[in-house]
Length: 176
Image (cartoon, rainbow, N blue to C red; front, side):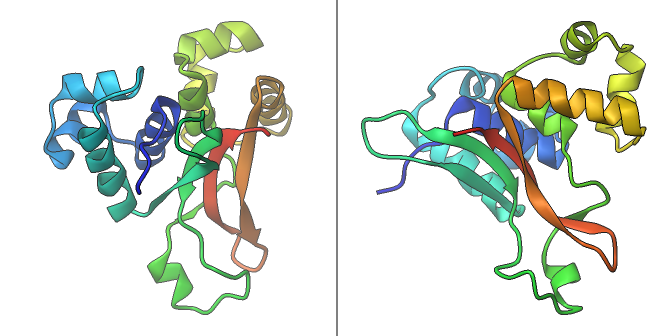
C-alpha cells in the first residue's frame, strides 16, 4: 500500500524543484488551491499520491519512516541520489546535482515560514535570505542560517563529490 506524503514533505519537494504553487499545479494537472491545501493539511488521498508521482517523476525522493495509522517520522524530501558514492561520469547526467550541499529554501519550506519570518528571527535582511536561498555563500552568514534551521529541528541531507564540487541527494527532513 502506498502512503501519502505529509504536507511539509510536499512543500519541500516543491521548494527543491523551485516551482511556484501555480506552476506545480499546472504541470501536475491539479488546481493551485489543491496545492495550497495539500501543503498545509492532510489532503485527499488520491490527489496526494498524484503529487507524489509528479515530484518523483522529476527526481524527488520522499523521506521518512511511515506506518499506517501513525505520523511520518523524519519527513522531508531530497533529490534522488545515486545508489553509491562511487560515481561514473554518466551519474552526473542521470542524477540532479547542486552547487551547494544545503537547501535553505527546502529548510524554510519544511518549517512553513516566509523569507521575512526567517530574516526577522535570524536578524538578517530579506535580501540576504533570498541570496542564500539562491546559492549565495558567505561563511559566517551561511553558518548562522544553517544553525538556525538545525536548531528548529531541520536536518540537511546530501553528499558531495570533492573532485567536482557537486552535491547529490540534497534536501531536508525533520531530525529524529
